[in-house]
Image (tube, rainbow over all chains, first blue to last red; front, side, top):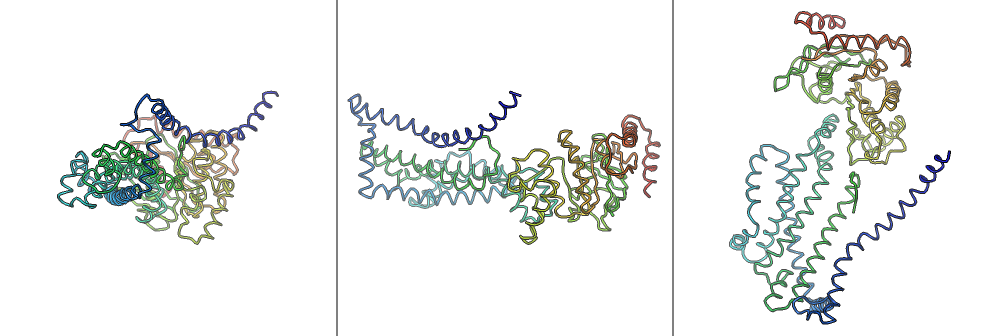
Length: 278
Length: 263
């Protein structure tokens, strides 16, 4: 009898406790992520203030804020950020389209896979920076060559992700489509696309991550604006604050763009059976 | 009328899965196929569903030769095979995509009510229990009102209580519009509960070994002596089909004796 009572009570209060701990977790999770960078920044600020370091090579946060404020006032920050974002967007779109199309072809057709996959895998083995001289010769030193380099970086994760996703679509699910006599286009729309979507989003995020690496490489190869240019400029003129500001800007933009991509995909992936979400 | 004429299936690797299968199933009849593993009973169902093609013979539904999935033939697999990205209502209505939205919604709602899942319409498949998922799969196959419904060990992954429950439920659903049912199972109790006629298959290659009529009144009492008697006959036939080393001549006699009952 008492056992029954205990069980009932426990079941009754469990959902309420679950809900409140969920709310807490939702608030605490991003906060925990901020603990490390903010804590380190505060420690460094204190260290510089009390004279443990002159903070010349690694400026304290207060110097960094001044740098940002100065860049923003002069309109420099906006100009460089927009330049980098524009290249990144163009390269990301180009790489994604090419990677998706070729990945889909390789995944769908065994013949196409045997034909093009070995070549693409070979090209993938080339360190991407190695393309820079060639791209400059072919496409000039302006935007086209930079966008092309970023696109190359984005292309491979997307290509591999799409191909692997299509190859791993469950035959049993495809048979459900066959039983309901779906046309080839309906099969793609109603079975294959939703089935590959989770892996596709993962590959887009991986592609975007590589894209951010390549945008710097691209801007190192002689740009007159962009966050990568800011890095080089800061190095040549001996302005560590400018370098660190550019690095922080990259970190923020990279994290932000990834979060936007993940958030945009989330409504389509609510059905996924995952252990934990973030 | 579903007719199998001398159907055989040999896989590209040379394995003969089925040989000389001849069966007539009349509209509304419930035929249950039992047999040891590897006797080709699942292969048989895949051929009838049109997912695979026979290498000999022909399968006809009302005179139409079945070589690919047909709108009048539905199938329920051993696993529910619900599409994880559609909610339960979306899964049940999957085969009604070409119908007007209003009609689709009504039919799905009615079918969900019928299988007792009306409260789960907006739930993701992963949130269903095994029995509920299989009921959703049944609803998806039934909502298009197929003339023939194939079931490939549909309840074998479920616990004994849920299984008995779903067997009764299947008969209940069958009574709605009395489609032809062809059920593959390795559960003899299930066979005797469901069947008008039980076909016992034997392996290497898969052939029909014996045919047993199960003409007990419905609903069937799983405890009754008559139930037991049919069950014993099926078990005996299964034993003979698996254990007895059959000489070539006898094998032919067995197959022909079975065939003679239907032709």
